[in-house]
Image 1 (cartoon, helix red, strand yellow):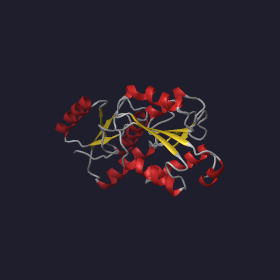
Image 2: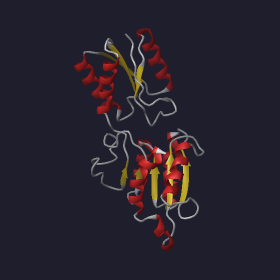
Image 3: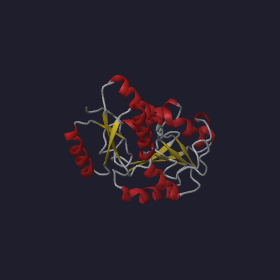
Image 4: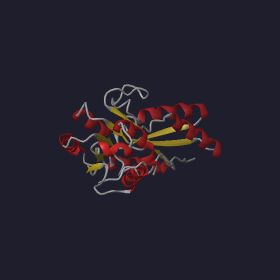
Length: 239
């Protein structure tokens, strides 16, 4: 439900009118481009329910064209081009990759990011306060929380001296998170071990590297490799 609730302020702003006004105008048509596997999952069902709570019922006063990439980046252009041809009123995306593809396909159809790791670093918006262009939505960009998590970890386990950080260097937001962790580690007197992984093979190698050091890892979630990174920034330590 959080997925839906967090999105609707931007979505309703893009629609430009409330559900009860639909009687006098044609029902809006959304194009929803999800990076995950085909088929409606819990987030998509929450999205539907959130719309229903606001008076929008799919198939009655709002229509949704669902499209799924199933993790295949080569489908981006094909999918967003199809949504543009369908003349949808809004394109809803769920990651930097799908948002970037939509941005390249249209400068006129409003694009609402359901989630974005770092829209600034990815060049999707000018600023968070004034994104500009035809893009709005939500971001998970909160690098300061990474340093705070490290502080809490140190308070909880004051005897720790080493922390390993696992991150995806292909994720534009990862650098910001890593910088915050490095600053916090220095101030807390912790030794930091960084482990990089941009693919399942690299992930296995990184975990093998960390195992002899008796480190557990902080995973920085990546939209691109969501099927690979199944955790949202869990962090723990070795000695």
